[in-house]
Amino acid sequence: MIAPGSTLGILGGGQLGRMTGQAARSLGYDFVVFEPQDHCPAGHIAGLEINAKYSDRAALELLANSSDVVTYEFENVPVEATHALEKRVTLHPRPEILHICQNREREKNFLRDNDIPCAPFAIVDSLSDLENALATIGTPSVLKTAAFGYDGKGQLKISQENPDTAAVWEQFGKHRAVLEGWMDFSMEISVLVAANEQGEISTFPVAENIHTNHILDYSIVPARISEDLQRAAEALAKDIARKLGLVGLLGVELFVLRDGTLAVNELAPRPHNSGHYTLDACVTSQFEQFVRAVCGLPLGSTKLLSPVTMVNILGDAWIGRDPDFAELLKHPEAKLHLYGKAQARPGRKMGHFTVLADTADASYQLAQDLKTKL
Ligand code: AMP
Image (cartoon, rainbow, N blue to C red; front, side, top):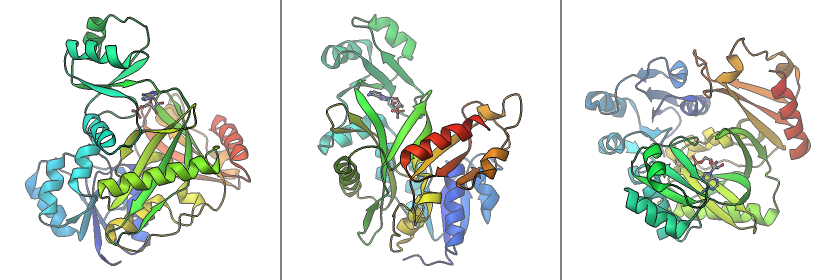
């Protein structure tokens, strides 16, 4: 166990790192952040902010020497950085998990090899691969960049029945990709699962996620699905965590298909945007659980204290004028979280708010109303 009073180091300095650092500080840990961009959101609350490239061996050494345990807050950290670190300091989750989750091809292969339900897929690296893949998977389908995709970036939906494959391949940019069958889903949900080295494993209540322009807009909790399906999603997330050998936190994004079955869309070995609701609505937040998991503390209760809806606040709200938070702040059951980002850009996650209510429906309704008043 890495006891309170020790130092948690984190690769990546965005809002996920910031909220993790806040949770670490509450538990009595010091906090060090490593992030290429200076003045990062996590840097504001870190005891030490190291600004260097992920390939900078001396800077990684400084992180290792300054930390008792190291983790990461986003999956595009080069895996080599974690390999260099694990030789010098305890690091969770293990680099292989990062390696799998930062690449769709490896992630999909992991899911298939472990009999975890996901969309039918094929790996595509040339025009002829694409033609073959379309012949088996058919349309509609979606071509996704194998590496470094997020929030729907690097994706191309193929809808027409006999597409001009050469034109599609050209438009996509001719790079290695995964062609996925289009899933006819009734809902998108996610489950966060935490595991520590002692073998404890725990999930948070299932979130129902609504995306706008491929970016998470609302998370509604509890998800408006049957108890059985909630239990099935939680069991699936635990199964994945065990098969990965997780120590840390993992976000599992799933589709609820029209026939009532589940299919995994994506895995994220870190806190997840759809888990922000836990800050205000659960006994233990996802960030505290993450700290507990990587430090080897007992996991906290994930009990939901109230139905809740979380809303992302994007940089778009700053275009032309600053947002007005007065109505939101006035509401007794609403909580505002801003990430301290100096520059607002369209689509950039600047903060979020949550609204508690007696039912999930009521919290969602209220959240929509309050969003229009920003
Ligand atoms: P991703 O970046 O893979 O999480 O995809 C972003 C969003 O695109 C998802 O949250 C879904 O709304 C949609 N999407 C992605 N893959 C599929 C699929 N195979 N079938 C249907 N919708 C998808």
